[in-house]
Amino acid sequence: MERGQVDKEQTQELISAAMAQLERAYAPYSHFKVGAALLTEEGRIYTGCNIENAAYTPTNCGERTAFFKAVSEGERSFRAICIVGGMDGVPTDYTAPCGVCRQVMMEFCSPEEFEIILARGVEDYQVYKLKDLLPCGFGPGNLEKREQ
Image (tube, rainbow, N blue to C red; front, side, top):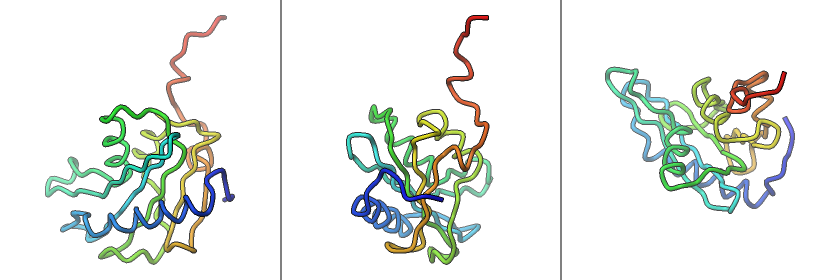
């Protein structure tokens, strides 16, 4: 865990935006609500919440919702994401992204630079780099042709 490139004011703005998404989460089965706020390189914020489904597999996490919204609008460069979550929308512990969300982050973000902010409140958060939460990750760079 480290404090990173996103300044405190931006971090608090991301946390507030992610917390606001808890109200929009659709979690009638698990009752575990997640909100996310994704910061682009240009300073735009895209938000997302988890959206559950009775068939479970079609469920979408808040982090992926934010990424898919941003990418569908043409964004491709990201600095950080804030994630908050908890039972009935009360963040009592830090909520880390699932493996699928980490893989989506790996597709669009530098593992050495992209920051993941896990928060329980505006003043209560931890910051990680993607490489810390997905060591030895597989991304677009693994598919580049290399000279032998």
